[in-house]
Image (cartoon, rainbow, N blue to C red; front, side):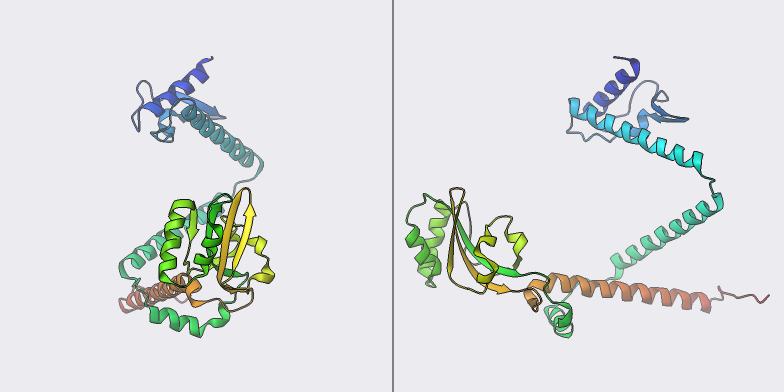
Amino acid sequence: MNNYILRIFCLAISVAFTSCARFTGNEEQPIARAFDKYLYAKDIEGIVPPNIHGNDSIAIVRGFIDQWQHDMVLQHQAEENIQVDEKYIQEQLDNYRKSLIRFQYEQELINQKLDTTVTEEEITKYYEENKKNFQLKKPILKVSYIKLSDKAPKIDMVKKLFTSKDVRDRDLLEKYCFKYSPAFSLMDTSWHYIDELEKTLPISKIGEYNYETLNRIFQISENNTLYLLILQGSKFRDSLSPLAFEKENIKNLILNQRKLKLISQMEREVFQEAQKNNELEVYKK
């Protein structure tokens, strides 16, 4: 193993086993070069998480060095093949710095002064006034389900209990599910997109033409597993999205409006203050 690779290995092991510790020895000794740029041990301290060791830590360090050299090569190629407009670059840097400073100030203002309480009345009012903006792009469903092994006992009894409205039957079914079902939801009142449900349930096998068939058991067998599904509610694409499904979205919309209003008010007030204090002038030529 040559000295270059040896240094990398030693460095990786040091990073892996001494969490955030300083390297000993000559820290000015570079560990990598790209043209006239050098990478030093101090430049990569902390890139390996304290719980990563051995070959994994070496791979992380090696990957970092490879990416650094890749970036340096591209930078060198760009600088060698274009006439750098230093004035333009400086202007862009200045504008970017101004934007960052202003953004940070606005975030501090929001953190300090934004009222983040949104009442149910506000949410309902916004929904009623903006219904045209809450049209569904794809179907949503409310689904109760029981997942069972296809060898689970007393399936016919489970079906009867599942459709029963009697509280005692519901209690019996819940006890059965705790014993035999790896996953179940007997009274789900939440709306879900189809693709979200498909991650855990074979919901597509019901068929979209059956989505209006509510409060009836659909039985699906798949991979030695039995699914009992009941659709408690359904809404189709291009229909009005339910308020319950849009609550969090509406809350965020209301808060965003407040943010914009707060920032606009701040801009107006600081400008007026500057005018009042004669901090602004326009000189005639």
